[in-house]
Length: 231
Image (cartoon, rainbow, N blue to C red; front, side, top):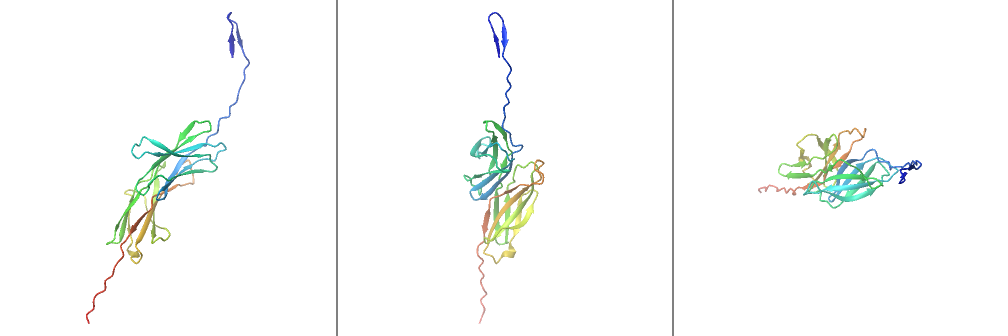
């Protein structure tokens, strides 16, 4: 502090140094998946770093009609592990694909950074009962840094546990599933797709997965009409 008199004399105060401890910030925060878990729920997960100072993770969903508008759908405080997840239950993933991002806010109230955007997979299908095959087609998952390694297709028959069918790793993202060997089943075929990321430099040895919605295709029962034998 400096004081001056009317006669021009100047006097300076002593010097005092203050050390301010600014909250440490996680070194990384990455939207690792936007994954459909039920017919009306999407899990959004952030890969982050365990931090002794609790930060606020603000989850936002892109407006379906105005892509420039992002709406806050929830907040999660702190990080006791490497992943932070929020469940979005105000969605219809059977009919629409959704995009998300997460904003990180420190305890001082400052916005630190915004993650990449994650966009869910929308799976659709059509049955061709006379030929005994189903056609599946889906939207691309985005946005991992290096893109998608492959899409794995899983199938359930008559409410049995899911089993791996095949994979697709290049456009067009579709698959024809021959189900002729299951002609004696009840004819209920359910599917979902799993996207797997290519390696990401910031997370060596890790890959991320995201799932599509689940769809079911129901076949009409087969009716066998025996021949009439003459007496």
